[in-house]
Image (tube, rainbow, N blue to C red):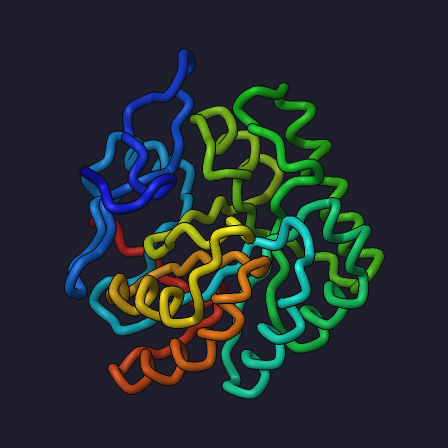
Length: 249
């Protein structure tokens, strides 16, 4: 049985029309997770989606999903600034409207800002035109706040995607970004302490890992500094997503 909920969902089509939930068996002992053996690998590669960096190098990529604010993103930013670590924050329309100062701070401190859709829908269930509208509204909102014209990375809400979703997103100028390290951190009523977050991430580290964390998690905010420090002790380097070199496997 898979060890975690969302991240071990079967790779088989979840519904008619070839809709997938991004999921895999986790990395253990520094080995690669099972993404390369899942049924959706070819779709991801065909559309240039990211889920791993160069698996021959000890490099890591920090990514955060920001659907709403729970009081911990400022601490996350503090840690990243102190440790001089780049990250990308995938924001929704709610976040853009509700937390303009944090969005501005992300940009001012050199982090990438990615698109997580305006209303966080299952994009496989809406029209191609609606997908475009979801993405344009977030990009325009971030541009108005930060002055940045470039937004080239997208994380599909809930990791739900289809061939059409990835194709439309690519046509809109986006690279879809998934992940290779994650754990159940998004439930704010089920936080288990910084050590749980630390152990959950560190036990899955592997070369080229794209790490997904949710900024609503108190555990993540409290564990982040030690995760960074101890990953570096193991020889890992944290890199900007723009530096990612995709290595198929």
